[in-house]
Length: 83
Image (cartoon, rainbow, N blue to C red; front, side, top):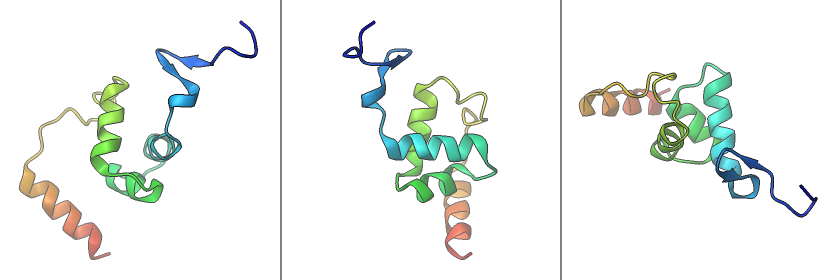
């Protein structure tokens, strides 16, 4: 491997990783932040972060593969806005 080769993690090249999504992923994985809080702090949407977690195959590990009621999700979002 030469210095000109790209560093890869799995099948994703390092230069293809979006900094904002990586930050959100790290905040969610390493802190007590919710998906919404981590995404907001990093400047991405909750759905972008959830998609990346699913794409990494970690939805089950983080409990994101559970079906949620849409009204429950809306209540959660409204509750976070009132804080």
